[in-house]
Image (cartoon, rainbow, N blue to C red; front, top):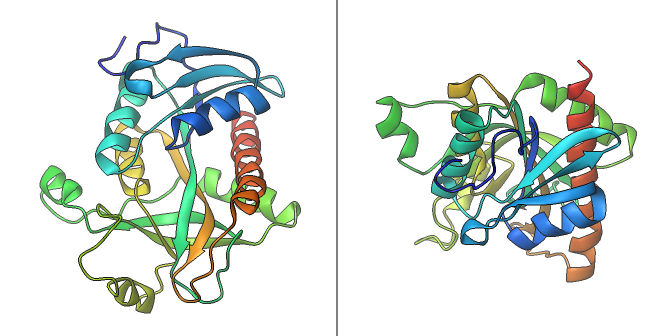
Length: 237
């Protein structure tokens, strides 16, 4: 048992989805997994293990932000031997052509956080696992989803000091903003594991468009299914 996950040895599957919201974790376990069992309730960061099309899969809440993701990803990888983590979450688009409901696969994750600079004594460029990225893109394209691959920024501040800061990142072709991918990719690299962030665009900075609650639910189901299908594909390699 780790400090923040109360699962016993063997209770966490090698393949994990990580949403930020504990209620989304519970929703995935109840709607998408068979025979799901809750292995973690510490601090309300629910974790479940069940099966998806015969593959044993876990869903573990990460919480919001890089420090929370760093903590839970490290414990999953270091204490439970997890081999593949897919973050599933939402993002805000920085590019005019990337509209709401589109999927963004984070090929790389820039950041305005100092976490990696003091950990590595320099500037790191964490990236997704290529096999996960390729599998997710192929599955999404075959399903007819609008999907983009590229650089995202993992920010420390949801409410920044300057509301126009995003324009500089957009100028350098950063696709979207979120808050966890950089920490996940860094920890996965350290532990020799696979990692990918699959993101649904819920807000557009250029147009101001935003999904309704009903649209969010439909789009998030598409993202959840893509994450599960991607883990299934990777398990067969």
